[in-house]
Length: 165
Image (cartoon, rainbow, N blue to C red; front, side):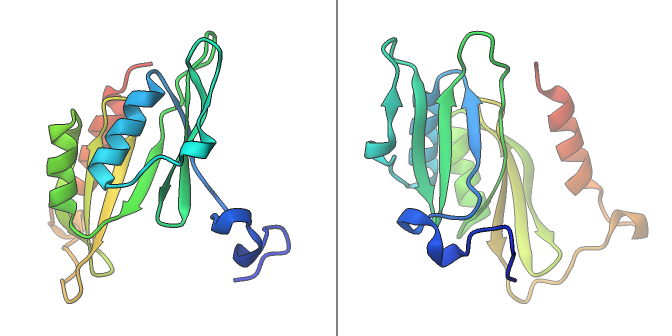
């Protein structure tokens, strides 16, 4: 689809994405380590911008073609955790890796419509990650309104209601 407003993908500098998420957390360096170790990606070293007090005002990690930008929360700033979607090879493997680094599983891997598997995790910084993996040939689940489980919605609802301000 072509947009009269968005820059065409091929014109985005540094082969970046048109949209890149930015999260503001306490302990940005810790979140960078978490993302690096769980997803097997490296921080973009040249993007790291520390302030004189050592807090990070900007850092980036490339996941596929998207840059996840991270900064430390400064005095007076509200927390701005993210709701992030990532396509992975195996949802269960990512959840195990994340749990080993302090995350909590929100939704165990479950079949999702469109031949995919969905799982969710809450990281120690209160970001919720939707983890998706292709599952060709997997049948669509039975919707909860037709007697199937309501796990997909209730687990997310419970996790969002549990977040602190």
